[in-house]
Image (cartoon, rainbow, N blue to C red; front, side):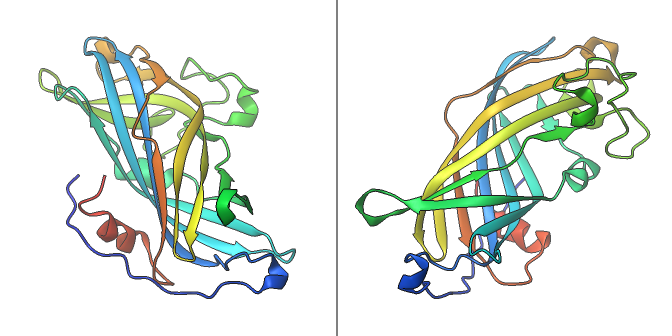
Length: 249
């Protein structure tokens, strides 16, 4: 996925009053860029290190108690493996079915007068019902927790693996992850920090080519683990976020 560079347009806000513990008013619309890394041992292909950058539309809103909630919508995912022999393609239906999530953000005083930012992005389930699975990721398409998550007529969630000798191969899989963000509010328009993955699991439950119908062994990779929240114009859409994402990774 290739992007052109476009400068983020800032919609400035004002800092909160001393009565509000000198906390800036973070309410508004934001461009959230999250980086993660995965080490994978894939059948036939071998070992690969995958860097992923996810571009999201986020909004932050103050609650009646004066705290803040953050809502995020995934707009684009850029996956780059260390080995050029293969490439993972996420169909539009996959991106469109990633859930919109709302969660509280915690702001607390840090050293040297900084303001710390912490967010639990809530465990995410792709291709199956986490409540029905009761803490266990499914291993078969007929598991009661598995359903046609992306509504393409196949069990679980479908992704495409591009391999030169096979071409595009559709994989049916289930996945779960749980990510946390820890950073610093640099000013009323910028928050930066590191990404922490605590859960990452994936199972292949089917494939167009039987040779690729086995599950990769995944582990959380090192590096490529930063995030940025940058204020953008109110009313922005995913199309705007994708334009802002051009030229970034």
